[in-house]
Length: 325
View (cartoon, rainbow, N blue to C red):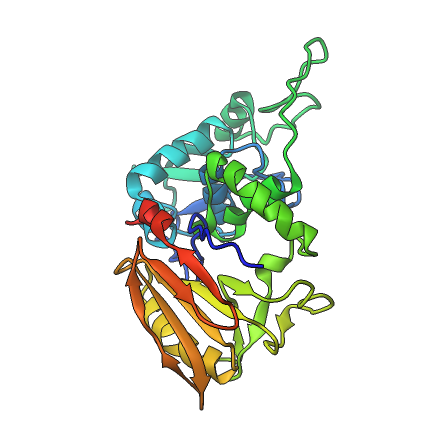
């Protein structure tokens, strides 16, 4: 049974151009002695800061992490990113310092930016920027608890909340606020009850006519247990509807409005629902025949949309107006 109250709180992430490198000698520098990477390195940060930190953490040394460049690759403006980077500095993950550029025969000083997934305290950073490589002792560093103090206990978060909060660490465009995570968690809880798990958002469907024959949908409607036992790529036989939400990238027109309708129609997916953020419309593709959808009416956000057989629901899109750019 489908939920007619569609939510666009989670917007999709799609492939973006490779992140540029800074000029030689500049860009991101990794601080030493970092702990091995895990899925919870930035769980203590707010969702936006966690998403930005996870993105920077996966960039190679020398990558350009200026606010202007990050704004071209992340779904945040320069002002928001500047605030996020300042918050990462305060949390001990990032530090800037001036360094004499040697080997040039000049007195040029430049600003370096060091990053660490392992949060460090001010004393550690001070020693490091003096040229030392300090050793962190047990109980030191941001967030460490004093033995003589009562530990601060965070409220217990549900499995659904944790999944939602973690989305932005691998896909920044899916970053959600704490309020959005709390609001969506009950719906994700029902999704878990139907057999979904934390790997489900990374799955896709086989669509031979689409590019390399595989497509990761932003949403997919299928009978309960339809994907049970499937691996990363599922056969679309028996599926009811694919859902996509356009992104603000150069490929979205070709990908979402041209290639995917062809791919999904050829795969005989009965309905393809496209939520278009550029013109604030919902387009309902249906009746696939000979690799093309025969019907594709569009409706403005706020309209009540009838989704045809085999979905057979009436969809209220009023809530989409809250996410208009």
